[in-house]
Image (cartoon, rainbow, N blue to C red; front, side):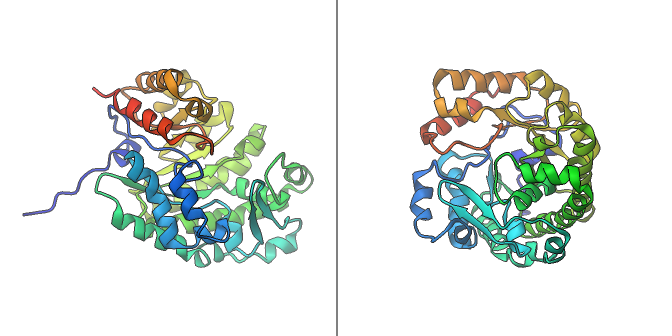
Length: 347
């Protein structure tokens, strides 16, 4: 008897179909809000070691799939494995977030290892292979990387926050920013291609700090341009693999981003209205966008808001998700309730 491949609901929507109810998964669905994650976290000396231990990272990736039966697993990793792989010092301090040695000059860029984003992060690819073997035929596997300007901002400032050094460098030496972003675009492309080769069904580019680019010229230069280059190369090598773009904080520029970059689907944050999301559906599939604070609160307000998003986007290509990552204090029961609510909207 011939084997018939099962279509993954999430991949079908990314390729332009509409489903009722929509597929559902969550940003930062594998992480600190889950007690089973906290238990495994104690087995590793630090966060980067955890990301680089495939057996543990694979188990963490699968935890929300096993608990909630979401439609996709997103590999457990971090956007800052790119500068780490390229030779910059990266540490994660408990309660403070990432800490990097600030990058300040052309010599710092020249010292970067252009191939290190893949070669020094081979454990990530092994994690993907391990997860791929455990997933059923209907559950998609998502790989990801940070957007070049987002990674650059962490590298220039050395941490998150207001990114004062990045803003200053954009103004005083935009050519240096160009050179760094160009190197990072190549590194991100390589990392995404390697994840696809390891079994990812789709990849997402997290430009978490695209909102730093508060004028059209800088947004086109450091967000749209590099993303277009990445998507073109990934699609050239893997034309059937969807690329999801997420320029968080893009405000009124989401439509321009979707049209100009060639991405296959658009993740939007919680500040985007349903009316705008419906308009965006005419360009490409959309993913989002419940406010994580509403998930944190749970209850009837969460269910009402979730139903309004699902019904408001019905008939178009939509993947239900959050507008940002799950907040660490979120009760897992709220996540389970949200999945049940979304699934109950089906016809």
